Image (cartoon, rainbow, N blue to C red):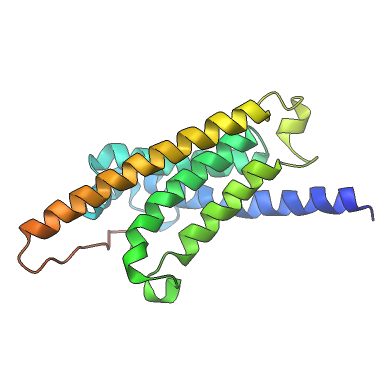
Length: 190
């Protein structure tokens, strides 16, 4: 078995697994599939977590996860897909960060892992078994990677900064200073 074959097979497995998980989480947010609460329920949860306006935030998170996940799994527009998913996961990390690292304590381990893997695939490329290869890599170019990751990083930084400001403002207004991070899906930002 050649090293190239093994690498391409490994990238396919990573794309299908990571893309599938991201798609499922996004579909929960957008459509209420897989036990999710759909766009309205997710919008309410996002608003509660400090992502305002909630509906726009829910739509952006759902599209970043479902759209980025589906494109990653297919290996189409791989740099943009990886960047979109990584950006969406940055928002989830911001929600879970106060609880520390480990997911068992409500920490950011899981969304960070999904974001890093999505980014890694976006940077490495989809491999031979992909729609990008079938289309001559027209959406898998260095300039696409540069634009997609730059735009995603700027958008994620803006969203997280806005959320941090909203949460701080709410904390100052509430006498006990508590921040609610649980939404109707059970875990904030996932």
